[in-house]
Structure formats: structure tokens, C-alpha cells
Length: 455
Image (cartoon, rainbow, N blue to C red; front, top):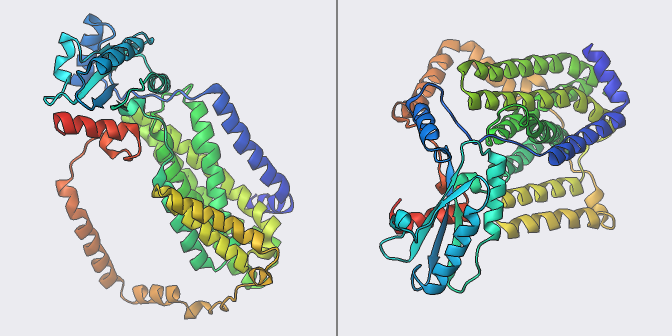
């Protein structure tokens, strides 16, 4: 079966590639049209906090929200200025009129403690009804931002993670940048690097974004689940494709044709990939047994992402090898330089350095354009001849371990125990708005509250 699948994908590579592009665009377009309904509730049945919310909800309807936000503001000359007081009071009234929202105004007796001692910083609490989901809360947050008054000397920030706008995980961009560099150095080939990256992005883009967003309309999935799925999906996607590409190159160097090498890679490494992927999916679905709704949703989202990424690995890899097998062992200077500049752009985006991201992107485009006229950029990069298996460092390392297994086992175990020591003093908890980027209004609101009322 594996050889037949590899053969078909190899011979119909363009069709498979187009099918994945259509799936990627189609699923995300459908998700955009339908919308996501991620949950922001983290209830723990039978816990004291859960029973407390039930009591509050029963006797004080609408006051038992599990989450909320705040409107934090500061003004030159103090928040008691007449124009500031009038403008902010009008804003609070407009926000309070929004469905599912109740505002505690700092200019009222009930909220007078929400004005800092210095009188320069204040905040209004934004409370939600229990049945408000994450998507609705985010939409309300966008509506609140549109109501901010424009007055000289007045700064208004919107606090609360539930009101924050979604931002792509910047750390994953940094990871991709390093993955590009590591794969190019390891393989010595831009195409051999590009296939694992492309497969991982196809799987994560289709499963981690589009499919999970659609699933959130029928299953309770927490808003952070896609980010967890993306992290896992990128890792397994690159890893799975890497196994097969490595095996493919070994077989071609042993004299196999590209088709034979692809069949052999999928029939050997592909089998291991499928077994590993199914194991990961089943392990993630085991989170359903915990009995917590948001944990179950997290497991379902991550499992769906891994399943789609696994499917991409065993179909897209042979398809791309069928299309680009002649370039897997060939690297030209334009490709190498373009890959390096793309890595720089991703690193800049991940570090929120706009100038670095823009410079990397422009240099990548400039390199491709210049290669049309500059012949040296189209020249092949010299590649060292592969060493015989027994002459490689990895082979010698494996032989050394086999010669002294107990010694290496004890040393390795000791290192693991050493790394486990910090677990003894591990303190668990949830992150807060202080973990957001300093460029976001959520973080600025957090900092203002800390400045006026203490951390």
C-alpha cells in the first residue's frame, strides 16, 4: 500500500500539490466565512470556584462572569479634568449599552476605588455575562476600541486578555528561521530544506488554523488551542518529512532512481511516520479522559492538527519529490542566499523588528530578480562528496555507545536527573497580560494598572 501510494503521488505530483493548495485555501476561506467560536471558559466541575460561580449566577444574574476586561486611562493633569471626565463618562455609557456588557464606572461611588491615589490613572471594569464566548468577547473588544475619545493628553488602553486581538505566535517564526538554517546546513540543499518546511506549513495551515476554527463551532475548544496545535504540528511536520527525505537521499546515492527511492522512503520511513503520527494522535485524544471540557478541546485541536500534518507528510513529500527530484541534490547561490534572507525576515518578524523583517524580505526578492541577469547567482554551490557510512560521525558515535552501553546509560541518566532538579521548586499558574508584547494595548493597560495600583 505504501509503495502504491508513493508511486501515485510521485507520478501525479502537480495534482496532489494543487489539491493541497485548494484544501488550504478552501478550509481557511470556509472558516473565515463561518467564523470561529473558541471558548474562553475554563470551568472545573465540582470545584469550589465552580460552585461559587453557580451561586453568584443564580442569585446575581449577569454578575458571575468567568472573565472580563478593563478600560485603563491616564491623563495629563489628572483623570478628574472636566473634559476627560465628560468624555470618558460618555464612553463608559456607550460601552455599557453594548449587549452582554456591564461597566463599573470609576466616576461613580461604586467604582471610586478604581482611581489611583495620585489621580492620574484610573480604570473601568468591563464585565461579561457567563454565556459570552471568546469570539463575542473579541468582537466587543474591537467595538470598545472604536469608542475611545480623542482628547489631548488622554491615553486610553484596553486591558484583559479576553479583549485582546489575536496575534500570530511570534516565537514560531523564530523557530522557522532556525529550522531553515539548520536544515540547509544539515542537508546542504535548499530544496531538501524547503520540502519539510512546506509540508509542515501545509499541514498546520490546513489543520491548525482552518479545520480547528471550523471545529470550534461544534466542539468546545479553548482560544489558545490553535497555538498549541501549531507548535506541535510544525515540529512533527518537519520531523516526519525529514525522515523520508533523509531516506530518499540515502537510496538515490545507493543507485536507486528517483521513483524507486521515493517508494523505498515511503515504504520504510513512511511506515514509521504513520505509526508515530497515530501514536501522537491517540495520546492527545487521551486528554478526553481527564474530564475537563477545555482540556478535552485542547486535545482534540492538537490531534486534528497532527492528523492533517501526517496526511500531508505521506502525500506531499512523494508529490514534491516527483516534481523537484532533480533539484534535491542541487543548490544554486540564488536559492541559498534567498533562503538565508527569508530566515532573517522571519527572525525579524519574530523579534518584532520591522526593519529587519523588511530588509530580509527585500533582499530575498532582490536576489531572485538579480539572478536573472547575474550569472554567478545561478551557479551551483560546491557540495562535498558524502562520506561512506562508516566514516561518518554519527556512525562512530553509535559504535562508541554500543561498546560501553552502561557507561553512557549512567552518564545520560545522571544528566537527566540533574535537569529534573528544578521541577522540585516548580510553581504552576496561568500567565497574565504581562506576558503580552509591549506593543499591544493589552500590555500597556497592564503596565498602567501596575504603575497606578501596584503589580
